[in-house]
Structures are given as C-alpha cells and as structure tokens.
Image 1 (tube, rainbow, N blue to C red):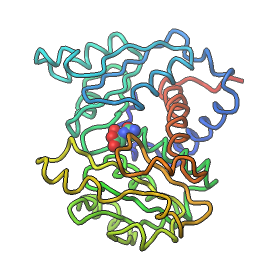
Image 2: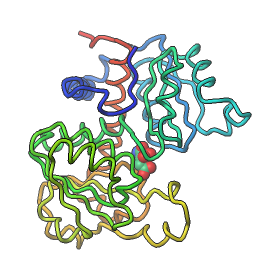
Image 3: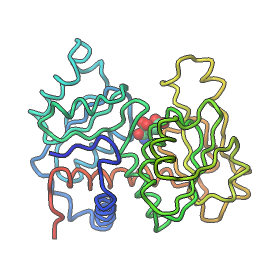
Image 4: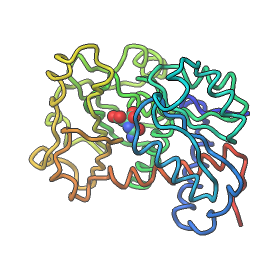
Length: 307
Ligand code: NCD
C-alpha cells in the first residue's frame, strides 16, 4: 500500500501521469463521474482548512464516491485525548482512503505506519503539503506548458510555508529552474532545505529582499501568507506580516506572461486590484487543486482511467 507523505514519494513519471490524468478529467468530466462508486474518503483535519478539505471532498464526490470526516480536532476524539495513531487505525476501518492535516510535523507519517488505508498528507505543520504541490505543478504546467526552464520567485514566509518547502523540493527534479527567494531575513528558507535540496543537487539560487529588484526576470511569482499560527510571538508576526504587498504598480515591469500563484488563503499580500489581471492565476489554481486531487484519489485507489 502506498501513502503520499512527501512530494518526493512520487517519481517524476508518476507526477507526469497525474498531471496528464488531471488534464483529461478537466476535458472529460462526465467520464469520471462514477469511477469511485462505493468508495469512501475520510478527511481528518486537526487544523483549519477551506480549500484543501473542501477540494478533497468535492473531488471524491465528483468521482461518484462518498466522504466522511471532521474539520477540527475539537470535534473528534482527539479532544478526549485519543492518539493520532488510534484515530487513524479506527478510521481506516471505515474509509478506503484518508486525507489528513495536522499541526505537528510528521503526524501523517506516523499515522501511515498504523493505517490500513492509504494516507494522503494534507499538510503537516511547517513541513510538507504534497497535494498543494501537485496543484501548483498542474497550474504551472497549464499556464506555461512546461515545468523546467522557468525562473520562479518565491515570496513571503519561506521559513514556515510548507507549500513553499514542498514545491521547492518537487521542482528540483526539473531542468533549468532558476530559483529566486524573496523574503525578510527572519523568514528565509530553512537551512535543512538549502542543504537537502539546493546544495545536494548543486542548484544555485538567489536570495533577495524586495520584489522590485527581480520582478522583470520572473516567469512565475509564488506569493505566500505569513504563517501567523507558526509564530512564537505576536509582535514578530505583526512586524513581518505586511512586508510584501503585490499591487498593480509593483507589476509595472513584470513580463506580459508572468503567472502569479498563491496557495491561498490570502491576507494582505496581494491587493484585490490584481485579481482582474490575466496574470493572476490563484483562483484558477484553487480549481485545478480539485482536479489534481481527483487524479490522485484514482491513482491511489488503483482505479483505471475509464475508456
Ligand atoms: C496553505 C496551507 O495550508 O499550507 N493553504 C492551502 O492548503 N491552500 C497555505 C497557507 O495556509 O498559507
């Protein structure tokens, strides 16, 4: 049985297949509407979510399957002190596949050791978020028609942002990806990723403090929210939260075909005026997240593409 805990659990070929399947689902939705008939997905969310949980649930419903689960730890037996392992052991009796989000890094991995059903990590603390990465890869691929040969700027909270960590890792396997990391010093990408990804793979990257100095180089700009819930003190969060605000004047020197991504939720880091610019991809990206999760659920349940 395979689980999806880290984006690197998937080979490049498997990612290509998932993106291709997601593209086919987008083109031929009807064909897929019953493929998960009789199957159940459980969403175990010990941490808040809108897109990830609802897109998983919508994905399973659009495949003809059913969903069950909970959306906060207070409404599950973890409020009574049950361990994650026990919760998962029990839920795997009820569900064919489980998507789990947890504030503690490594919790979905531990759960996978006890589960009788495949576990999908739907975000573990500041660590990984592999299904957001699939969403991001599908978005970049649909917008740019390629995953290599791009200059991508990651902007905002590169320290705590798990979507950044997972996407940085996943892109390291494609040719000629030029990384520009835009953050205040306090929110730079963690050293373990510098060592495990950039140094190990001999990838050079730039580290800068402002969007303005690099905007004209970018093919993709990946904006992120400052991760309030992972800060140790409120004062640091308040000081750093509005470091970057992307607005129309900031886009003056950007390429015509720049793709602006954001995993959402947005707080202040992208002005609402940018939403109407054709370069803003973040709402399309949220929609693609549903389709790529449909593809993933099918693959993990071993369901063949219908004729
Ligand atoms: C992200 C997450 O949960 O890490 N959201 C999401 O899944 N779309 C990003 C965030 O919360 O800032």
